[in-house]
Image (cartoon, rainbow, N blue to C red; front, side, top):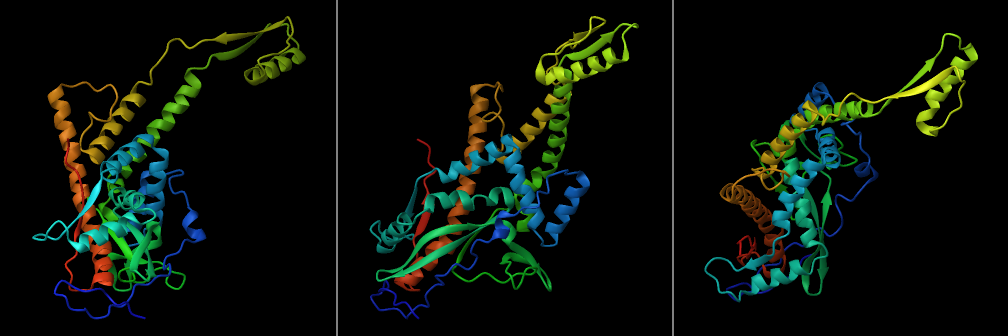
Amino acid sequence: MTVQAGNNESGHTPEQVKPPVTREVASASIRDRWSGYPSSGLTPRRLTAILREADAGDLIRQMELFTEMEEKDAHLYSCLQTRKLAVAGRPWEVAPPAGRSGNDDAASFVNDALSGMDNFEESMMDLLDAVGKGFSVAEIIWEVTKGGVLPRALKKRPQKRFTFMSDGGVFETPRLLTEDQPVHGVALVPDKFVTHVYRAGSDMPERGGLLRVLAWIYVFKNYAMKDWVSFCEVFGMPLRLGVYSPSASKEDRDALVRAVTNLGSDAAGVISESTRIEFVEAAGKSGGGPYRDLIEVLNKEISKAVLGQTLTTDVGNSGSLAAGLVHQGVRMDVARADARALERTINRDLVRPLVRFNLGPDVRPPRLRFIMDEA
């Protein structure tokens, strides 16, 4: 089957273009919902093993860990959401190619096609998941109608469904894991996927995400949080102390033990006159001391890694107006860089094939851009 493209810029009818694959290639499976929960009992040694697996191309445990990190760390989740929304929450427009008039037909067609999608704005958040995990993939659900070939929706595919391994080494682009190829996967179908890659400091996508940088901070913060909770559980509660006289019988002592044990939940008990229960309060109150200090330091490191600054996220931070403006400027620089990178991905993987399928291979595609200018 072929799709007859429209007239090109020269007025000639272009050659027929092979239509896209309309079926779902990477449809959701039960394995997408299953997780090994690698953060349970996570230690530095286990983290090292998980990261080494990812270096070899096996991403399953690393991506499951990254998902749990966002679920369990509220500060990390907040910083990543703030960074994503700085781009996904912006208006966008489709501009004609350089040197073309503002009434370019291709730009108008692409704008209408993207606006008519079921979830285009929501998909921007899905694609920006690459900021944390290094890369993200969305499958294009094409629909062939009498009016042409249109993208109906973008469906996010979990990163653990992909690999960079192959028989001969490690690929630079992700490969889809299938039932027939559960280890090395298969190459992605052309014009079927939008693949957004973010590189925080490595040329390899599996190592380029910010969550790779923050994995060690997460481990140390997790230790501090667990110790702080255990400390608060013991320190803040008064000690229930049972006291019995030397003349108390064994029955009285056993009844005293049961009363002290049950008093925490029942708040009532019956004991002999020869025994009594005392509540010993903690000598002083504590704000958490080193646990709080360590967690605050680690939270600031998370803010700096994700947002490039700390004044716009940390409550209680004081600073001059000039310092605040500088930090806000740093945050906007990060947002603009994310927007430009996402624009390149959308224009390459979605806009170009959309124009080629409908207007022909000779038509210069327009450019989607996010409006990042401040009022």
